Image (cartoon, rainbow, N blue to C red; front, side, top):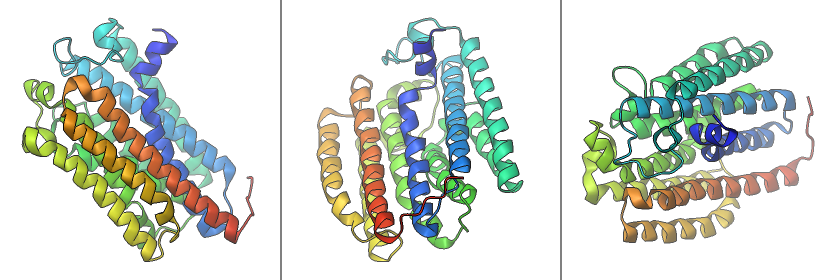
Length: 307
């Protein structure tokens, strides 16, 4: 396995999603507390990357093993197990190793924060593994968006706050809603483009249940609701009010790209372009969030605790 093949197996480009959530939660914590425990933040970043890459590696292995990824329906050249005949065993071993590293970093974080973190982290890793593993993988059900958005959005955001010594509250939970919706939207785009191949392999994703006509509607609903939720959170004080200034241009970019997706249709041959739109929408949202919260931090405090 080459370095490039390894990066394709773990889909390194998609790690911007989890890193966007962690970065946003960190700045949210900085605004609340005025300080950041940098050592714990760095450990959280590395542990999250290991879990995320390991989860993707397991997905790559089991999708190939179950025949979901195959030469007939899978056109993405990044699927190296299909198109470059990389050993599936190597993908499995890499994923196990990454989960092992995540466990080690998690133990250090638990020592520095709370041993409860071991239980929470273990649940997250189990969900990541059983997303495509086991007799009833989550990815083959209509609940994929719920778990993806729930764990990569809400749960990861809250765990980051907990690690950074923030007392969790209802307001903190509400702050995760846009992240939940936008990450669910990314999976909806993925599943919508894979709808024909997934149905042939026996999956029953939400996009399959909605069908060709309504699967794209789900993407629009999730994205628009995320922006509406952000507006409500800004107007009610959970987010800085000036976040709205940053979100207006990104919202119009989202609508423009969404219309282009509708025009092209959600098909496998357009998947790379549509996934680019979905991922870019999330990254732009996170950038708007970071700029707004960063401005608010600079306005209210300049203290940064470096340990």
